[in-house]
Image (tube, rainbow, N blue to C red):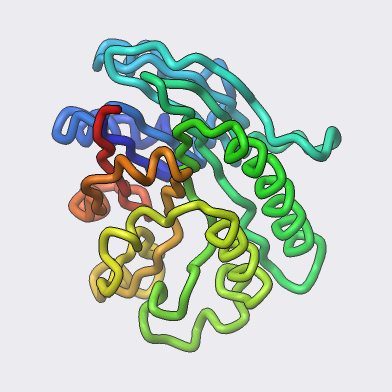
Amino acid sequence: MRIATFNINNVVRRLPNLLAWLDATRPDVVCLQELKAAEPDFPAAALAEAGYAAVWRGQRAWNGVAILARDAEPVLTRTDLPGDPDDRQPRYIEAAVRGVLVASLYAPNGNPRPGPKFDYKLAWMARLRAHAAGLLAAGVPVVLAGDWNVAPEPRDVYPTRSYDDNALVQPETRAAFAAFLADGWTDALRRLEPEATIYTFWDYRRNRWERDAGMRLDHLLLSPEAARRLRRGGVDRAARGEPDASDHAPAWIEIAPR
């Protein structure tokens, strides 16, 4: 079972890119982020024609998350992150697909910091951790996949000082991510490639793609039940090099059947 995460950075504009990648790689489950589309504008019909059913939460101009399933119907279990009834930003969606509970998440960026956006980022991650604790306690296979907007370690950022003040690399941000690992979640790509340089994001500015000046921001965290079934994983870097591509590349894993 191949599960992928892809910050598509505008699903309507980049629908041709998405469809081409789906056709080339045929993942079983895809978690999308940054849809940048109102809910009625989500291209469900085009995705269905490609063999993918979907659940989604959209928002015009910003945010938005979705889960796609190939030749299966995702069973929607949650459309928001609990813990703050006033938070209306569509950053979390959860569904069961073929016996695996999958969440697509788009964590807040947090810039500029210090300030309310950074405070919201840390509070959101604390809410996610609290919800994730309940998923761990359920003892089922779970995949928390998405754009976490965290570069967990210095090696997850290309050699530079330009990000030193960025919310993505602050000690508080990294500690929030590390807390998930301490709770028992497995960082799948890092488990598979403990020494490798892995990037999933290359900013459009300053020729960062051409220079391979990337960051690892997109992660798939696995519950123990899912981690035991982990077999392979990687990053489809070629998608980032296509015309009019997202600034992220899809990251993916394969887990064995039970």
